Length: 338
Image 1 (cartoon, rainbow, N blue to C red):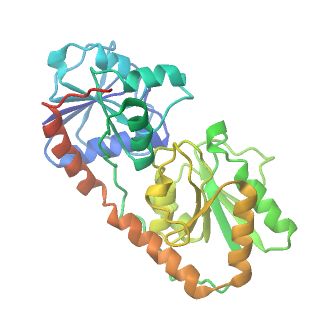
Image 2 (image 1 turned 90 degrees about the vertical axis):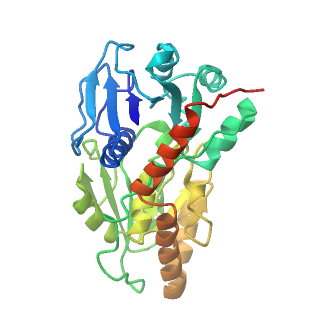
Image 3 (image 1 turned 120 degrees about the horizontal axis):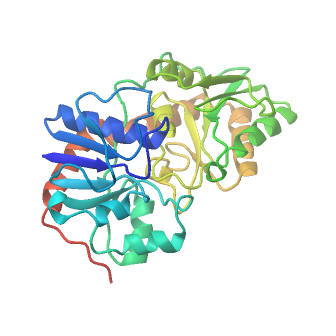
């Protein structure tokens, strides 16, 4: 197939969204497909290289024809909708409800547009769009690097010092502030904890932490996760959220949230594969309980169940094969809303 990811208006920078598109493009190329990525901005993504797919600078509508043309973000959707029909079947990979980029009203209108077919990466987003349109979009996840993320050592759940982990990103919907609040609350209560963070941005001195890893590669990130006991993921608007899945593959116990626009509920089953919190105070109480009880059997069971859950969702290759199958069916499909 000829597969085109339209990134116009979104750009290609060092972030999780671009990483997902580039990883997906590389896997699809390895599966034998001709893959294009088009953008109106130069490629600024440096975490890894495109290995086969072609990155094309375009003036928005001038790009090669393909069997399917996929909008990768809400800003690229109008350029896909307005492209000539011979460019390819028009799809939209909704990986988050991007109300930080467009208003809810604008996004709702695009969900309902009959000239583009959305598909999503999580069940919460599926329910959200179905409620708005009356039509249930397909779920197609990107998969994870199961071969790259695993515990580098046997977990020791009988310990005197506990390591909390999270992503440093101060965009409002990430709710990063919950992480240091939980950390400082536990310290005030007398718990021996450290906070290890990683991220793309320069660390600001006023953020309490013990370790910060900036733009780590996969190997360094695996070592990082393997030293973290509890991963804190407070975000309220991630379509799926890849880092908690990577942490779970390394047998970190994840403390996440169950928000309408977050996909973590797809892999965090409260008390079985991880834990869910409603507010940061709940998270602090939950971690205090787990540390106080020190139930090695419970913690080990949760950690291993979390890893198995992520494995069950499939690696990148398995999920891209599903995506190709969907693309082949979508070529003749239509999207209508009530």
